[in-house]
Length: 408
Image 1 (cartoon, one colour):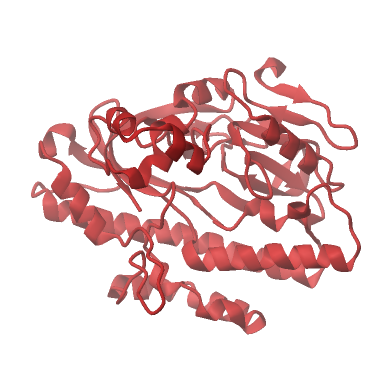
Image 2: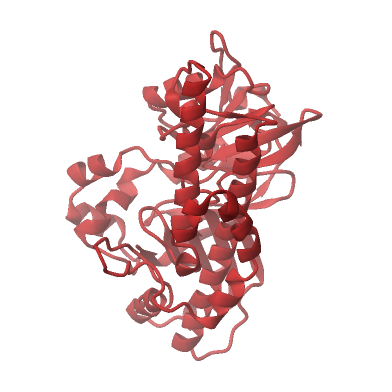
């Protein structure tokens, strides 16, 4: 393993930054944000930056932040437990109909997606009447949730059951993909939805209040933290762990409903989960690195421990990858969570025409309207360059190309 695989940056008054960004663009603001995190007094060893790195709120997206004795809620963010799930079916490309619009519509009916805001109106991205399977799945989470709500009653009136098994908006998606052998996969991307957002938002603000109360000056207010041993630290770790479990179950229930929708559209019997991966890329967890137990926050990064499978998606017009971790200790056993943005959402809407979007998503059954321009392929870094920059972090197991893409 060569040290030349990453770029080393010394940070005055902080730990170094190691960046797997050779051959991919990195915004100066992202570098500044990484340096701010590196100056926090409880960072362990160094901060690692993945090739999809770009500016985020609180912490840089595509960063791995190991800490001892503290946790930074904004580094996890508000889409707690956001991640990917992929499952290979026994279907082949020739088993799919020539026109895939029916399959896209069936998936859109099976999984609530998008969002509507209006007083008294139901959010179209939630269930109006959760199916029995969703209610049964929620039963696995409700006891721990009630314990959290006993301390923080505000979380009781959030979208929890009504969002379980739903997609959301933005970069969340459901795709039907073909791999290098023309086998059909289902792949999807979502997190902890409304309840996770409420938990993340509340604890981020609580950490800021604690910093002000204790007169602790920070390089960036969004780096407000909870010291280990405090009640707020324990409560946050409990709540964030629960939200991460909600996110994983959310993806599992969506996958179940997408597979059921496919079975209604494709009469040929098929197996559904010959190979399956379900991984977070916005989360905090306890791990052992360099012989010490630490908290690892992955903000837009995937665990890539030795032989652990992960998912690195491209954009709605690019390839995605099922990968196997190489267990590189320098990246804290991590890899990128996707291609990474090169344009903000507003910038993409300004700079990319609808004609360009239609051209860049040619061959994909997906939305071709102005409402998804912020997710258009040109808004993202080239996924091939991102994969090349992390060749010492993961090896590619399967290469997927979407033929159907559902966006919220």
